[in-house]
Image (cartoon, rainbow, N blue to C red; front, side, top):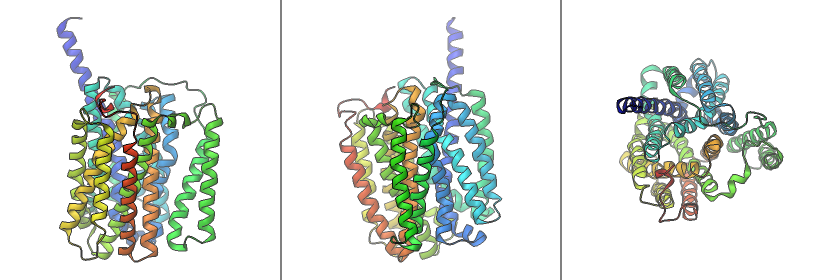
Length: 469
């Protein structure tokens, strides 16, 4: 091939990769946006459609529950039948469900549509990273791509409360769902035109029904029991029964995954520390982070009497901090061990939570802004390093399962955080419940730091998986 022809081909390939990066970032961005944007809308949604704290928790958790319950299956299907196909299908489902959310006539219909959004989100989150890592095969290019992908998702996550508040103030709460429609159309179009599939595994026996059913029942029972505990109390028979069902279903899930020839979650992956520890860390930090976002949204609107827009603006310091930390982590990862970054980020998150423990209804915005910035920077350090460490522990044919497992763990953490911390706020005075949530979050973040210390897959003198294939 002539040099000019080679140069032209390289430019075309580079342009295609950038478009794939844009499309996959759009997919993960809408997923993350709808995790956080609804939090600032809970008061206007309640005023418009009715429902108490428990119903509003389900508006948040129905999405997260479906997301967490189906993400492993979506990742497995992507590995077997093509990440591109599953990603596009997920975008279509998510976009249609967003329209259904915006048009919901009552809170029950909204909860159902939010669950359908979660189905689409599972496919988007599990396959976006597979498509991205396949498009960027050179180590240096992959470093930059993963950093930008993570930064885009973090920006959407942190911008959710701000954008949601602005949209609600000007166009009403349905607008936070309508905004997903043009993004969905653009993402589907770009993916169909430019993305290609990574290598697939055998397409036979693609579905693990027993694993899916037991995982779904366990998560649903756990979420329902945690939410209802706030209204009924921990000793209520229904609550105790829910926890019992969750425990039994979880045990059956493990048994099913051990026995089936095609498990959606191969348990042997957990024998690898670089796989198992990031999964556990993702669970702990998400309980703390997303649970606090939900309770703080209640606090700002009920205790400090802020509007949805003002509530969103209170979360603004997280935006710059998370994005800055994502970029910082990508740069430092070339010469700093992953566990050092994870430990530092987790300890910053813990410090932010402990610093807010004296909170009262009259605590000023400057104090909270500083704490939120510290919290966001800590999370922003942890997530990209944690993600790259896990993805480096498997080969490309397992990338969907690996990404799905991490996302399932993180979304389960989000689910438990909203359910548990929302229950604390419901059964006690809101400020007291918030303080308890802050203390629990600090303990969980310290636990994540401890897990980071024992992350043995990458020694201190070795290069990070962020900087190699």
